[in-house]
Amino acid sequence: MLKDLRNQNGQIVALILLVILVGATIGLSIAGTAIKNIQETDLTEESERAYSAAEAGLEDALLQLENGSTITFSSPIPLEGGGTITNIESQDMTSLSIPNLEKDGVAQVKLGTGASGTLNISWDQGTALVLTMISGNAEPYEVTRYAYNCGSGLPSNGFSSLTATAGKCTTSMAIDGNGSPFDQLLRIRAMYADTALTAEPGLVSTLPVQSVVVKATGQSGETERTVQVERSIPVAPALLDYVLFSSQGSLSK
Image 1: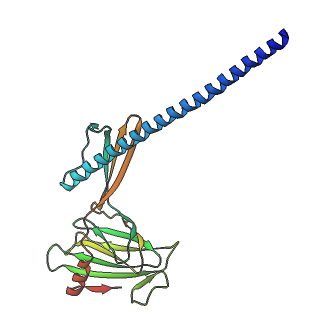
Image 2 (image 1 turned 90 degrees about the vertical axis):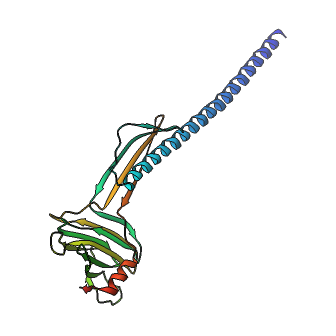
């Protein structure tokens, strides 16, 4: 009888220990989940504050450009809502790169005095480009047009045809920023389809700044976020090309 009682007591103790162990495991699991959720919430809030700080830095830099100033940054700037602008930097770009120039859309390359050499223009197969070169610094401006089809399958339009390589066509244009009249501006119109477009200075050529890449970094706690934007020079509306075409200029093939 005494032996049975001892066995029962031992089983009860083991059961109690098991219940305590299970309860502790569940408690620790709940506590761990709660701590993890708190940490994730803190990280999310820090990320949002860092991103907001980076956006604020970007807005400040673009405002400097809008006012005609050079972008400057000397030291970190703490913000009232939390987060710190830790860095703002910019890079002048003398080439033009447009991931998607829409059909009938117009891109513009600034030339002007001193821009001499060659300009290499690349675009997608299945698209035509009409290039409008505007020369001179006063009326009457000299207007010359060049038109190219990239690849086959485009309508019969009298444009010069180029053979596509790896889905791209490239043409090189001579530009003269020292002549009389000097080349002032190149307008590039996409026809028949959207296209990716690049316009880059060729060998020994120089070009003015076409765009400015601005990058700003914000920080909150240990979290950093960076935002970047490319600000292009202002582009005259597409209507300008029709005005020039109706008033003067010729089409060169």
